[in-house]
Amino acid sequence: MKYLALVSALLPLLVVGQGPPPPPKAMLTGTDTTMIHLDRCSGRPQHYAAGVLYGVSGTDANLQAYLKEAGIDHVAAGGAQTSTSGWGSSVEAYKARFATVIDDAKRVHELGGTVIIKTSDLWGADDTQPATFPFPGDNGDWTSYDKFIQQLISDIKSSGLALKYVTQIDVWNEPDGKIFWNRSQDQFLEMYKRGVGALRAAFPQNSRYFLPLVGPSTAAPNPNNPWFVNFLEFVSKNKEVEPDIWNWHMEGGGSNDPVEATEVMNRLIRQYNLSGGIGFQNNEYGTREQQRPGYGAWHAARYEKVKFHGLRGNWAGGPTLRDNLADLLIKKDAEGHYRTTGEYQEWKTYAGMKGSPCTTDAGKSIDSYGTLESSQRTAAALVGNQGFTGQATTVFSSVSGLGAGVEAVNAVVQRIPYNNGGEVTSLVKVSSTRIPVIDNQVSVSFTQNDANDAYLITITAV
Ligand SMILES: *[C@@H]1O[C@H](CO)[C@@H](O)[C@H](O)[C@H]1NC(C)=O
Ligand SMILES: *[C@@H]1O[C@H](CO)[C@@H](O)[C@H](O)[C@H]1NC(C)=O
Image (cartoon, rainbow, N blue to C red; front, side, top):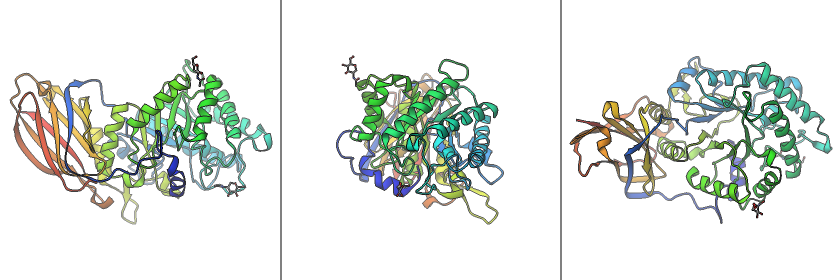
């Protein structure tokens, strides 16, 4: 999750793919181009990149308005790092944590979103547990874990959270790291099988109470990671416990690109004769350094390509872990009132783009999320990058998608500043120009001076 020590310890394993992980992408300078295909737009915006890990138990009164404005529709919650610990400490500690899950879930469900319950937090394995903390199945005794799962099932039902699809259960967080699972993999697999068996019996697939089970939530979904290979072999032999949603984290080296990772995961699913469940999820993505408008918009473009939900990693700790929307918001004054960051403005922009999402092509470093609102004869592109400065060009192809006979557009370029993580309250207008349509295309260029910034390009038929 959010603990720098863990991430650096796992770095050599973290990148999906064969061979050693690539170094982080070097800064690219020069020219780069992304294309938005206005003849390939359909459906409604899904905001695949707009989930957050924790961060919605805010202390300022208007948090719900921010959640809505930033389009946040997936939240993972388990009460991590609340002072009470969890089941491994006492039933009362667990109950206090579960109460925070109910609050978070209600908040998210009220906005039509999905909550992912982090079971390991409710057990108390959240990086604050002492070295002597018990884990499920210690000394071969499963009594406590079985009771825990039955208690969880009963609490989910009695608190009204047994809502099909929009409540999901993450079986255990990052069990391939000692911080969250300080026991053998065999002990984990036994727990996983018991947990999935009991939860699936309570919330069956194909029933109106189907709560998808999310796993294995590995920090290192790498075919060279023996832990992950063992897990694949295990579910290949025990198909009844294959996760409903295959989930892994993207917080390691390189770009944390879900497009590359998805190719690898699809290959592994086929290789191990698995079904792939009902889909994928990355319920933690992005390093702290990637939490900037430029990289954030790039991740949005990438999750829009793979079309499954990603949740922003959370690098806070202690009480702030569950406040501030995983640092999309900052608190500046003594009263603890929220202020918006540049990245928050990028999320708000992403959430506010209307019309149908379009297919887009990435450049060498830049990529875009594009939408077409043909009824308004307008289209937009949110442009991000993996570390680029220079001349960026956004090409809108098949401009006839705006309407027949369009000969020119008004193109507006706006910058979404990083401002070193400080407060940002609005976008900055860079240019507004009339651009002729040539060969049914429009090219809009801008100078990217700071890779940390994102850009919004809007074209409207004139
Ligand atoms: C794991 O358990 C060992 C043995 O009890 C302990 O020494 C170590 O500190 C624990 N590690 C973590 C990360 O909790
Ligand atoms: C997958 O199925 C094929 C064909 O039935 C079989 O040859 C192969 O061994 C299986 N792979 C695994 C990992 O079970």
